[in-house]
Length: 324
Image (tube, rainbow, N blue to C red; front, side, top):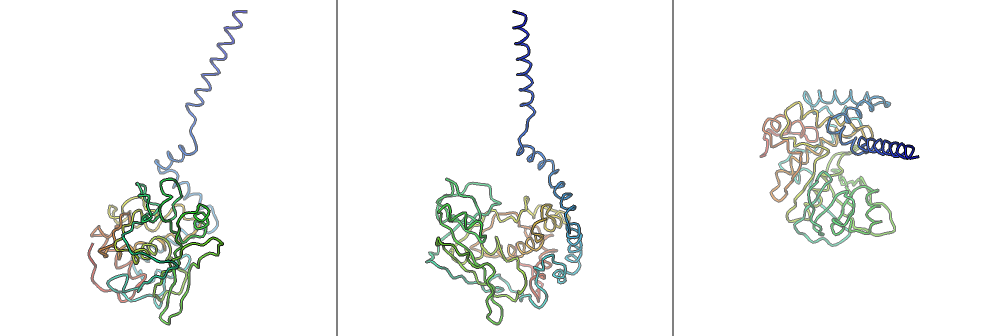
C-alpha cells in the first residue's frame, strides 16, 4: 500500500513538473507579436500577405513607379495617384513664403474660443500628458489620466466614442474654397442628438479632387489659428524614426512604403501632404513641433526633396529653400 502511495506522489509530481514546463514555454499573443516586431518579421509577413490580395501587387508596383516619377518629374506624380488624391497642374496653388499666404486659412466655431497657449498631442506621442483643458488630444482613448483634457477628431467613430464618455470634444470640419468662392465641405459634422463643439477650417485652394487634407496637419493649422503659441507632439504619420536621421534610400522607402497599407491605399499621398505641411509649420515662430517628420533638418534631404514635394502641390516654385 505504501508503495502504491509513493507511486501516486511520483505521478503527481511528474504531472506538476510537466505543467510547469508548459507554463514556462507558453507565450501570450502580445509577447509573440512584440517579438516578431523586434525581429522585423511581422512587417514582412504583412507585406507578403498583402501581395496575395486582389490588386495589391499592382498597388505596390504603382508605388515603385511613383518613386521614379517623383525623382525625375514630380509635377507629373498626380497621374499615378492610386486614389487620385494629388492635384493636377490646373488645381495647384501659387507658391508663397508661408502656409497662410498659400491657403489663407480662417476658422469659424460653434462656441466662444479663448485664445491661449495650447498643446496638441497625436497618437505617435508616448510620453506624459498634462491632464488639463489646454491639452488637446487627437484620437486618444479616454482614461483617468486624460479625462480632463480636450479631445478633438475629424473621425465619426471617435466622435461617437467621446460623446459616449461625456468628455469635452471638438469636431474639426475642413472646407475648401475655390477661386470663385464655392465652398466644398470635406467632412460635415455628424448628426447626433448629443451636442458637441465644432470648429470649421476654411482653406482657399484650387484643389477640386479627392483630398488628403485630413488628419494631423489641418488639425494643427486649425488650433494654431486660435492659439497664442502651440506645441505639437507626436505628429509622425506612422514614422518610427526621425526622418532627418535617414539616408537617401531610407527616406524614400519610409515615405513611400507602408507594409500594412492594404486598406486605404493612400498612405503615399497622406505621407507627402504631411511632409508638405510640416515643412511650412517649421517656419512659424509660435508653432513648435516635436515629431519624426523633420527631414528638412537634414541639409541634403532638404536640398533635394523640398522642391519636389512643393511642386506636387504648388506652381511657380521659387528657387529659395527656406530656413531649417
